[in-house]
Amino acid sequence: MRFGKKGKLSPRYIGPFEILDRIGPVAYRVALPPALSGVQNVFHVSMLRKYVPDPTHVIDYEPLQFQEDLTYTEDREASWELEEEMQVKYPQLFDDDPYSP
Image (cartoon, rainbow, N blue to C red; front, side):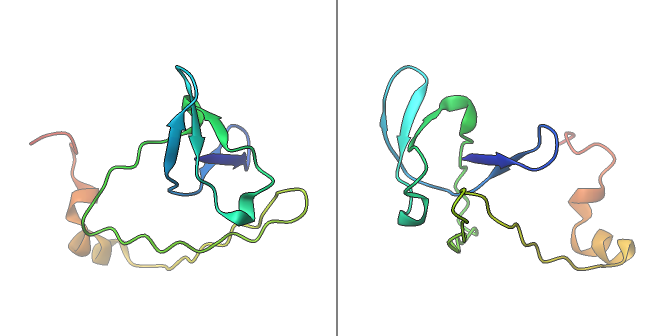
């Protein structure tokens, strides 16, 4: 689910959340946690992103801390690694043509 903007036209997504039902041809009702009770739970399809299941993906949901105006502070953990180390760990990220078989 796209939520808020940081910078010009920069969508942010939170979730995943379960789709409860289809409201119309382009609108869906989403199961939101109680912390998001002030947010409308019906979204246009353009505001949703498909979740592609991955058996190795473990969803660790941490509830966001919202202010009264429904904004939140985005915290990210960052680490610096040498490019050579990244090429060894993740060679697929450095392929010349990522779409070639």
